[in-house]
Length: 123
Image (cartoon, helix red, strand yellow):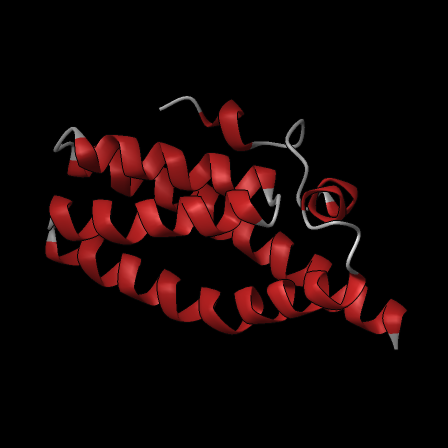
């Protein structure tokens, strides 16, 4: 698996892109980011469990939903990493999906840090 697809050239969080997509509504952006920050740890746990169980259908289901959520808030790096895991699981390659998980974990940690930083800056 080529991890360059979800590395630094992809933005952790494209806040301007998110704001452009939602009519520059700062309050809505905050709500979307807060919801993602609340839900992401649970989703990552579900994904980890599915990977440990070796269930490519469950991995695909969770990773696909994560990919969409992350793309919608313009979390480009994490979305790209979720896509890699999703693509591998969809193809039934649980080994490749597992190999992509550490990059997704790192990307989601960076995203959560960016959301926390934004909250501190807004407060």
